[in-house]
Image 1 (cartoon, rainbow over the protein chains, first blue to last red):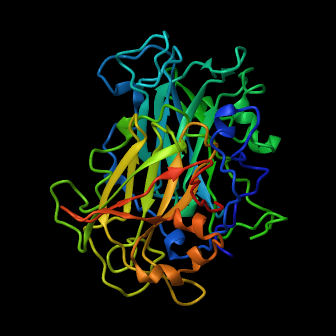
Image 2 (cartoon, rainbow over the protein chains, first blue to last red):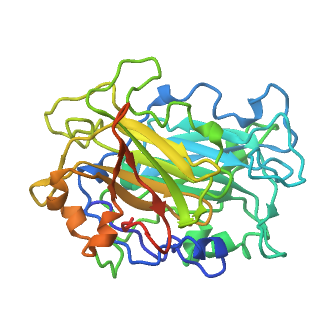
Length: 233
Length: 197
């Protein structure tokens, strides 16, 4: 199985994680089967800049009015096999500046903002770069445990070059004291891997005197990645 | 070379925005809603995602990836000189409703070669994402009644016949188009066979 080796269990969360009852309830009880990488896995959906409209990467412009909160720029590069991934669809979704999602499943009392929907898309350029303009989201309660609040985060979805490079993750903000005790982040065993989900504060990538800038680079599984030691398949 | 410093997976969470889906994302039979139709036999695949039997999973994202009717992929890694279908992308997505239900309209795929030689039975790759799944679950849909299932190398890798059977979608209707049922069960009775990502 030379292509797209199975994930290193130190880097990615397991399905079953005892501190998260929602994960314990959904983790398969039976062992998973090896899947040889056939043409069905080495291929995947192909996107281009034609798949998104201009402005879909600016979440502050969704309704015409100015949303409440701190406007930020989040940008970065999507990489795999040590190279930029061009034409990767990157989608983000997030809570608003009060910690509320525009979603039927979020029935909290936190305020909705009529000028913020919290979803955006773009396709990476030839250098694998993406760029979003959005509002800094607020923390909100994690549910279940009374003292657990999710750190401020932005959900990311990336496609990459094939079915095996598909990846969904969350980006966090540097210096947030809620990061260390977070149970979702805590499901990632390797501390260095957890740190890779914290964006870098890079004011120079923002808009001068208007928006603070953050950089979040994303490394997807590559076709030629080296299998981790102990790989059984 | 050391393993690449990959970005770790995190859960989709409960709030994936329906606005990120386009209305025709679950209809693979044409590229655009008013565009020309893809070649091949139109089929439907309908099912329910369950946490366990009896507890449906709402707001789960189901993504499918498949070959066209000729068994070829609209992708540069498929370098075979075989007929393309410009009206078929092979990719679809659907969010489950409050009852955990999803439905795709697509084309019955052709067979795809296996790297060990021979052919795979027609199948569809499936990714499942939702709250509580800390990363995606991978599975496959095969079609009841296809004589090629018995020789499929991936199905043959599942020794337990009952577990293997969870990947073979039964036909539930013939009209107006053939419809197949594919449920996804995370845990317990009828637990779906999943693959290592």
